[in-house]
Image: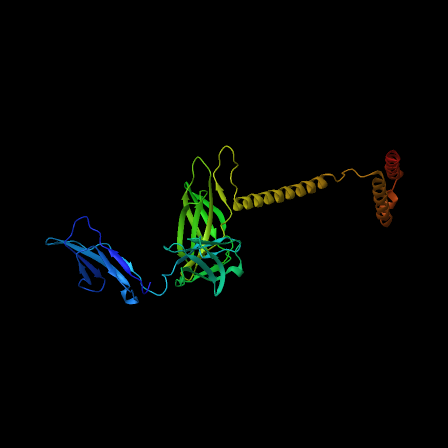
Length: 354
């Protein structure tokens, strides 16, 4: 802090003859003495900088020590602030804000804009936002106080709530012992990043900075066991990324306790095949019924129809003979007898049918 005294100790295992204090940007030593502890009194902002030391034993001069940064100000150095797991989250997710400083015995204050959110003596300071929504979005910062002196504000941390719907994952095809898994985002951005995960949440494959809203992952088939897969996509927002919700799980392969995985595409194919089979069966049934109706038409006329046909034939024959005088003279009673017999036969069939 400004106005206090700083002590810089140049530690050596040898009993050196001379010690030198060096400051970055200055070629020669700023202090030279026989003792290893250097004192800088009444610190000012000009004393801030990077310091090293050297020593001399007899005529040999040592290398430079590890550098030490001295910070002189009327305020403490600003704390760090980060967000876990990240500063851009989905609605409903949790986000944790962490502020930290190397100093002890301090009082942390968290701000959202100019509004105080929380104060605590804990270091690091941890603030959890549960079930994040739009009201939690905004700029956060923190600072601390030691004794009566404040630190500078931390860098601003922007919390963004971005809803990216889950993608669709489909087993697209099998190719010579390999799987083709398609991951499709419901919307398209300028550039998109896709990741495929296994059941252990390990990244199996990643496709970066593509302009398409769907990608294909080619993987070897999991022999002898089943495997779970799901995918996610992300878009860039400033210097950070916004991640989508994970897709539904896709299960590949089987074991003794599990049924085979039928993907949506395979189920659609089975459904279409079943519809085609039902249509063919319906066509066959209609055709069979049509043939059956044709064969069921009676070939022998019923008694009333037989009687009507005989009488009509006899009437027509008699009219033709009446018109021809020669035929009229040759007409004999046997024809009448035959027709009468046929009519009697028809009457008999009609009585039997009753």
